Length: 93
Image (cartoon, rainbow, N blue to C red; front, side, top):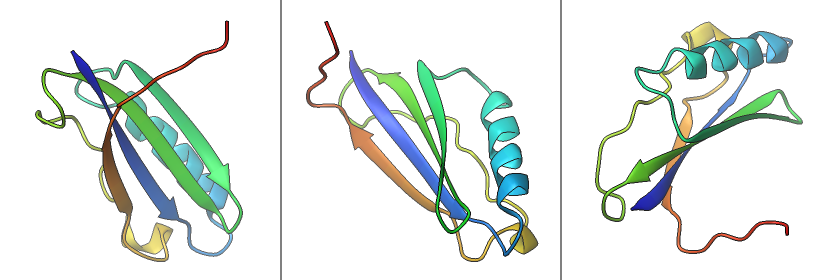
């Protein structure tokens, strides 16, 4: 069993960073199924990043629930999305 990480990143319209952050947090909780792990980040310029981790049978195969596109007036550009396959993992002992 492998792991796939889905990354979703958006930049909020001026002054709407907190609103985009809360919107993204609510969307990840409403996915049709729960990921193995999820994290929500904020960055300068009112950017929001969500990473969800999913178990996958082989490589990048499989469909996973996606966070939708926010309302056009909440963001400054289309959402960026990336999909990655884990090739190595390490943790703190």
